[in-house]
Length: 192
Image (tube, rainbow, N blue to C red; front, side, top):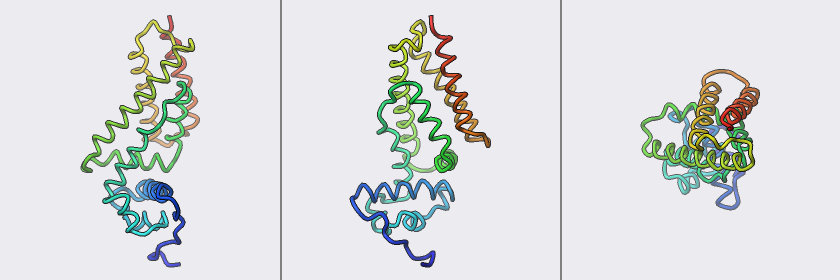
């Protein structure tokens, strides 16, 4: 099989399966090559679909990018802070996701990107608030400090963790254990 010919249609099946194959291939290709150098042809090859199938689901490469970023909004609330932080660490430890996030941080000219990123952040914040409400109800976080202050402090810890992971070659999982411990200590010091 030559590189110019599409791979066999491994994504045949239900529309959701083909769409998911395109999303996975897009995430990997954009992470590997960068948004501007990732071609729809390469994404189709990796997904095992025709260009017609790609454009059926995503009219443009920008639409694919926005769909990749929009996926986080559909995540259910984390049952507690540990689960929320585990999600953060899992994303940061995934080299494909890490490369994709680095690439997205360089894109300011994609129409609709700012709005999707804002919606993603809003959804993530809502999941964190729900997790902290659970922590407070279980007595693992104090109630003497306003919930909003607890949210701000955990967001600050997460932002610092993600920044460090994104800009240096650190072991994201090992550093994730530190993130968990810092969040636990932060909430403990906010207890009455």
